[in-house]
Image (cartoon, rainbow over all chains, first blue to last red; front, side):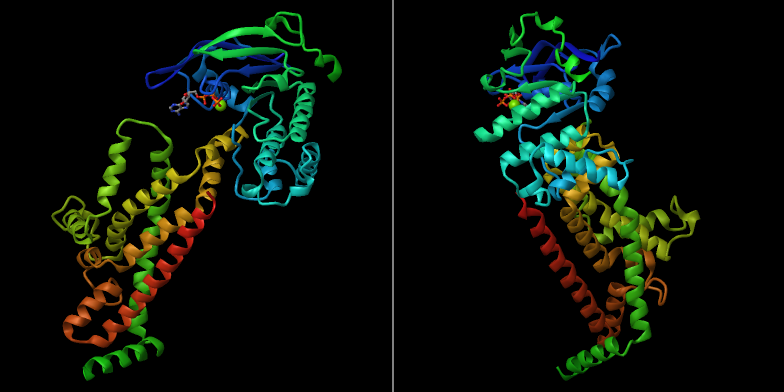
Length: 236
Length: 233
Ligand SMILES: Nc1ncnc2c1ncn2[C@@H]1O[C@H](COP(=O)(O)OP(=O)(O)OP(=O)(O)O)[C@@H](O)[C@H]1O
Ligand SMILES: [Mg+2]
């Protein structure tokens, strides 16, 4: 089973120590809820995990023992997708934005097919041809999710994925996240509203004062590190 | 006064009758300037990108260096390369002085800082998430770079137009490095200077009109593209 484990993650911006020895692990098909106040460092931690932001120091194990973040960066970037708190849309249509995440080796037919599947999956058929820079905030979130999904990552780092969403869209996003989980994708969901993700979260990590301060097993009685993803069975 | 209006009428006649000398001069200007621009553009854009996205010691110094180089007069660049390329100079063995190549070199030196400075500004204006989104979606660094360049294409085009505007109208470097040889290194600005000093205003006015036309087209498109880049917040 694939996993990523971070330990002793440190990160400071200037004199402010945002992360002070944080540890976190991601397992196949497991959803980890990351909570914390504004400015606690949720986004920063997720960006470090995705290989986008350089930590001051971190030990990272991706299945071959602990090494420095720098040594593991390639793996992290190749296997993780980070969804920005405010997703960025490339200049072009929604469909073109989705196409960006597809491997360039695909045939045109296969490409169109996969885009169609993703559009249906995220309920975006109606805006497929819209110019992506001008769609609404909620639509952006869904396009970003579908785009990340097309990348078929093993790990997904979702930064406030239900930001900007109305109730309907929130439920829809939750359903999408559940289906990602079933596909065996490991997720870290950052949010300061924990409630709405309780039903899909396997554990909840609370980030405060630069440390993971509360580790509570949510939705499972097993301690966090021993969780067996139930979804494994569903997948088979 | 009558003399001037006669010269102007003759200038239009020269332009529209397809005067061979006149059009060869225009051709040399276009050839030299576009060649200089084509050689300079790739390394300049790469450098602009590195200055915006890489973090290294001395980065700020390099940025302000290029901003300073922006305002170096063309004659000074002409003088510098004249000394380098002249027979006693360190590059004298190349025998480049008073050739089109020397003009191209001078104009590269002129437009390079402009491309770097304006390209850097364009890259700075790009959304930082563009690069990250591209990379996290599996784009190689090269593809991510091309993606950002697409996002800021109007800013980059503006840099290109401004750089072309600078080299097509400069006289100092062309005069000193090219030597104003007819059919070879005489371009629009050097021809204007020479004809005017000889009292032959017609050709000077004709070429001046061509330069004005260039300036008009360049500035209009510059304005158009700069506006376009800002439409999307
Ligand atoms: N590039 C940066 N330069 C300087 N400071 C930064 C940078 N990025 C983040 N910070 C600081 O680090 C702290 C943590 O930021 P981060 O975005 O990780 O918080 P967060 O937990 O995601 O907050 P929110 O709930 O608002 O999304 C903030 O105080 C922020 O000001
Ligand atoms: Mg955040």
